[in-house]
Image 1 (cartoon, rainbow, N blue to C red):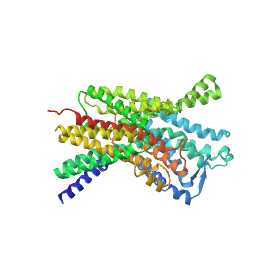
Image 2 (image 1 turned 135 degrees about the vertical axis):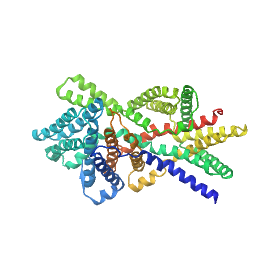
Image 3 (image 1 turned 180 degrees about the vertical axis):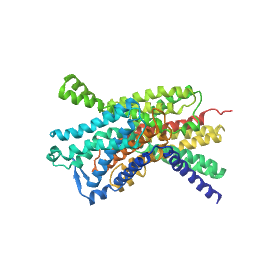
Image 4 (image 1 turned 60 degrees about the vertical axis):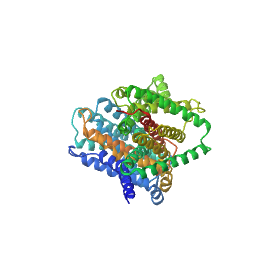
Length: 562
C-alpha cells in the first residue's frame, strides 16, 4: 500500500509540476489594469475560444453549413466570419499596442497594417469612393499614432482603431465590382486575403507553439525522476531503475533494427551530437562549472521568442520591400523594382531561411556567452545546440545530405547508449552517487519519452479530420495558458497595457491561422500552420531536448562538489 500511495504521489507531482504549476504561474493577472482593458481582453478571449471550437468542429461545420467560395478554396459561412473577425481584431490589437511602444514598433506595425489595407484597397481601385474609404482608414491610424505618441492607454483607442481598420477592409470589398467579377463571395476573399497579409505575423507564435510538447517532455521527465526519488523507498527505486534500463534496451533494439535509420543517418547524428557536446563544453568552460538542475529546468520561452522572431525576420520585414516594390512598379525607378523583387524572391527560399537560422544562432550564442560567464550557462548551451543543428540543416540545403542527414530518433538512441555506458562505468567504479543516478535517470527517461512526444497527434488529428492539427492546437492553447507572466510588470517603454495587447494579438493571430487552415482544408501551402509548428518543434524543441540530455550527462560526469 505504501508503494501504491507513493506511486500516486509521483503521478500527482508530475501533473502538478508539468501542467498545473506552469498554468498557475503563467496566467495573466488583472491587478492594476486600466479601465476598459479587461473588457477588451475578454472579447478577444471569447473570439479565441470560438476559433478553437471552429478548429475542433471544422468537419461538421463544412458538412452542415453553406460553403463560401474564396479565390481557390471553400470555407464554411460561419468560419469565414470568425476568420474575418480574427484578422480585424488581430490587426486592431497590434496597432493599439503599438501606440504605446517604441518608435520602431510603431513604424513596423503601421507598415504591416498598411500592406494589409493596401490589399483590400486594390479591390476598390476602380471606384474612387471605395478607394477613399480605405485611405481614410489608413489616415485615421496615422493621425492616431501621432496624436497618442506619448499618451497613456485609453480604452477608446482600441475602438477607434477597430473602426478604422474594419471600415478600410469592408467598404472596398463589399462594393467591389472586381470581387463580383471573380464569381467569389467577398467574405471568402476577405478571410483569405486577410490571412495572407497577417500570416507572416503568425510565424513566431506558431514556431513557439511547436516547441510546447518538447517543453512538457523535458519538464515531465525531470519532475518524474525527482518525485520518484523523493517518494519511493530503496527497493521500489531499484525496480523502477531496472524497468527503465529494460525499456531503454528495448527501444535501442528497435531503433537499430529500423530500416528507416540508415547508416548515413547514424553517422550524421553522431557528428551532430559531437558538435553540440563540443560547443556546450566550451560554454561550460566559460561558465567555469557544469550545468546544475536549476539551469536545465530554466524556462525557455523568452529565448524561444527571441529566436523565433529573429528566424522569421526575413519574412517579418517584408512590408518595407513590398511597399517599395509596388511603388517602383508603378512610378519607378526600375532598379528599385528589380532589387526589391529579387530580395522578396530570395528571402522566401529554404536556403535563405537556413542561413538566417545559422546567423541567429551564432549571434545568440555570442550574446549569451557573457551570461554564462556570470554563472548562467543555459541560454548559451541552448544557442550552441541550435546553431549546430542549423548548420547541419544548411549543409542539407547545400546538397550535403549524405553526411548531414541527422534525425532526432537516431540522436536520441546515441544519447541513450552514452548514458547507459556512463552509468555502467560509474557503477563498476563505485562512483554512482544518488545525484548521478538522478541525472542519468532523467536523461534516459527524456531520451525514451521525447521521440514519442507527439504520440497522440495522429489519432486526435484523424478524429479532427486534418493532419497535424492536434499538436498545433495544443501548442497554441498551451501558450495562451502559460505565457501571460510577461504582462505582469511593465517599463516606461513597454507598459503593461501594451504587453497585454501584444500577448492577445500574438495568440489571436496564431489561432486564426490554424482555424483558416482547418476550415478550408488547405495544406502544404502558405496557410499551413502545421508546417510552421513542425519547424518550431525542430528549431526550438530539439535544441531544448539535446541541451537537457547533454546537461544530464555533464552533471553525471562532473567531479563531486565539496
